[in-house]
Image 1 (tube, rainbow, N blue to C red):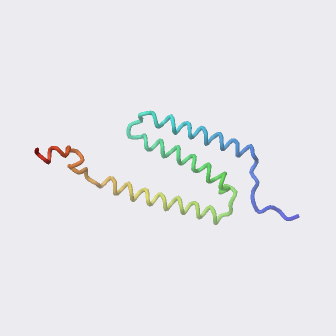
Image 2 (image 1 turned 180 degrees about the vertical axis):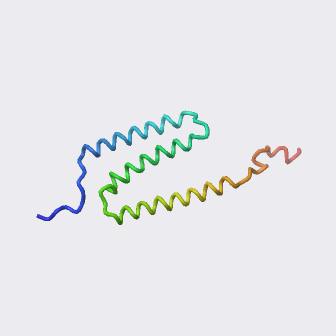
Amino acid sequence: MPEHSEHIVSPKIYFTIFIALVIGTSLTTWAAFQNFGPFNIVIALGIATAKATLVVLFFMHARYSVGRTRLVIVCAIFWLAIMLALTLADYQTRQPRMSRLVPPAVFYRV
């Protein structure tokens, strides 16, 4: 009898991951209505990263995959980190424009 080339995950694990994702979604909704100051985006991205990790590891079977698939996932995450770092570096170097701070009526005296 030939062996399966894929790992079979029990429904109990799928149900546990589903409950974790529902809790993560509830936590995201709760956090959206709270004021954490400058940490709002950090908390939102942290929760989203945790949920995406669960989806990739279990629903996409990356946890049980061969080394080449893991390498592709790691390279994709590394590329995403490069793009985010470059975007944030560009955002931090921008100066606020005066037209955004002063209402247009100041420029046009009527």
